[in-house]
Image (tube, rainbow, N blue to C red; front, side, top):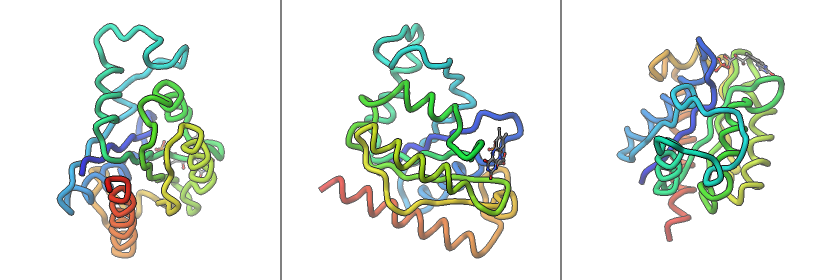
Length: 181
Ligand SMILES: Cc1cc2nc3c(=O)[nH]c(=O)nc-3n(C[C@H](O)[C@H](O)[C@H](O)COP(=O)(O)O)c2cc1C
């Protein structure tokens, strides 16, 4: 299967991106394809209108939309900023909703530097996914103390967390598989 992971931090020195990389590594380790849509590289301008109603001179938005449409599932990864998902991820969702997400199974993953793992952002993101006519997986991956469990290239450095990310990935792929029958 083909999974797109939207990495929701574009902050210089960001730490949550390592969760996107770790999930990508784990998905590939179990023989599926992972594509990371990195909001830092995408440099999406602030919302003025939805994809399809805004200029897309070099086709960048069309390419991203197509990548998501041909994916079997998506994972949205966000840092928790002020108790919510990042404004960059919300901007991305607003631009591409609903056409690019309609009917997709979407996993929620969050990260924070502290112990709580971004749980408030995770619940908010689940609700938002319902609004874009997509299906949020009930189980979420919330990663606290993110630098203690993943290094910069997404390699797991904590044994307990290894079990957690493996289990989340297996559960997620099982969830996506249900949409294919
Ligand atoms: C603008 C801003 C708001 C933040 N708000 C929260 C928060 O509400 N809860 C939390 O646990 N951490 C918060 N943090 C700290 C993040 O958990 C920390 O930056 C973490 O590394 C994940 O974000 P990053 O990918 O930008 O590094 C905030 C950080 C920033 C920059």
